[in-house]
Image 1 (cartoon, one colour):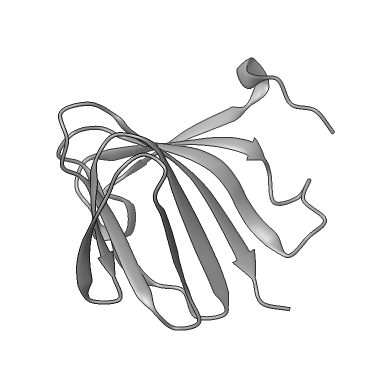
Image 2: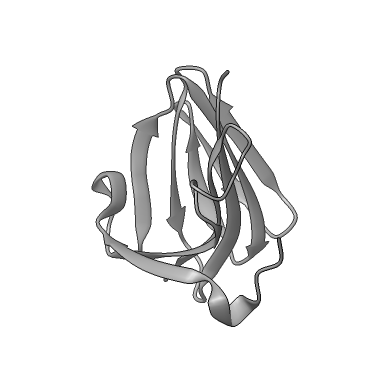
Amino acid sequence: MRRKSAERETEIRHEMKGGKGDVKIIHSFSDQELQSPARLCAEIDIEPGCSIGVHIHELEEEIFYIIEGTAKANDNGEEVILTPGDSLLTGGGRCHGIENIGDKTLRLFATVIRFS
């Protein structure tokens, strides 16, 4: 299945997971289209000063891949800085959150996969 950029569904989440400001999620494919255990496959855009709050992934894991911008992430209680090309993996009861600490849009690609 092919999806052109202009055909992707976009949603805005305000104060996502207790974070600050708005987060734009641009879905590559919906969870109904995915036949794997994945439930999210999307670009996430976070404006300067905005964030996704700290939250736990119990029976799944999430992968962030930073495309552009600078992020401060909570990686299960450890604060880390992420820049383009960096990745973050969480799941199995661990927590994470991410904040744009740069002066331009933080763009990342995220995939959430349920444990089978």
